[in-house]
Image (cartoon, rainbow, N blue to C red; front, side):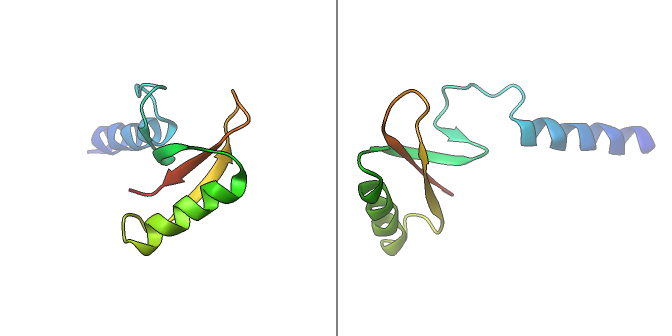
Length: 76
């Protein structure tokens, strides 16, 4: 039984780290990528609009490393 718990713990850690996940996937452990916006205020407004419509309950905007855009991430 100890071996099984170690195996399950390994799966949990691998899942949390995104091991085996495609880096190009829009649906990641960080959430679901909903699009790129400029400026930051438009990203926040899009997140708030989606939350108000019940499309998601949490959102945040993060700077895209490859461009000057802001990426909207949501929980679903």
